[in-house]
Image (tube, rainbow, N blue to C red):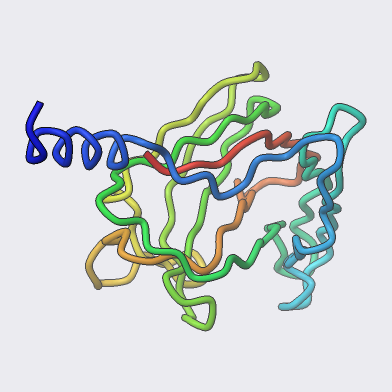
Length: 178
């Protein structure tokens, strides 16, 4: 093959290679994941994040509607990463049959997040989230700004806010971008 074909094949291989953002295992540390619950606004929900015995991230807790509460979230800051031409977040999780939000920020200091809601099935599954469908939201309100362009990521998060009092558990294995 000539040099041009080799370069094209190398580029295509690299372009198809996923970017791994999180890959939990038995030696993973959960200390750099931060809980943000409705207590920041006076609510009474509570949650925890840690590692289970199989090496998965475990986000668990109880959402309370008391005192205008109603959400629990866990956030993870990343070193700023370019997502290049990637189009899909691929998340291997095991939920509890409840609906969650996957949230990202281009800049961790932005007041809004880009959001995608998904339903879990109580089984291990891979949730695929089209980057272009993630909409900007602040305090549960959709903002009138363009959807996420996927150019850069500095923070990712999971949030549960189903407008009901409920306990929850979400196991996270791997988060990558394809």
